[in-house]
Length: 176
Image (spheres, rainbow, N blue to C red):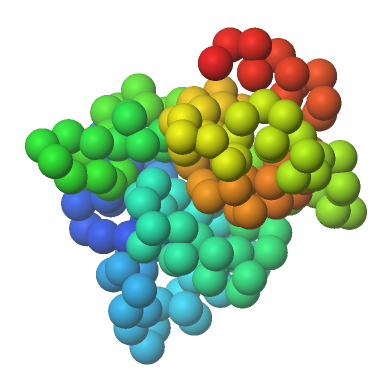
């Protein structure tokens, strides 16, 4: 059983996670956050730690951002969009057992001291912003680095927050 509690968006996400790993889960119910949800997440965060595993879509990113501000030492797990899409729907409930296990094996944590290793110039130089294929390139690079899909601003923040090295970045660029 995982030590940390996994925070997901819905009941179907819990079913998918439990097929992949033995873990306790808490459900946010999307962005509704009923009156007991945040206190329960806070208790789990303080006692066992949490892993945030939200859908790789805009709503999931807003929930992840909200929770990360409240719980800055939370671990982050990302399932790439292509591994969480089926039947025209995107979500953790659509991800395979293997994709969920991979995401949980490759959790990210924020560095204690935020780095400034990467800048917008790096994104521009590698066609990760400002080009017609930038979205696709960021998705592929995010999957390779286990930092998920994001817009350019959030992607840059993740590169710096999660301690991605220049060497690891360059190697991943080569693969995409």
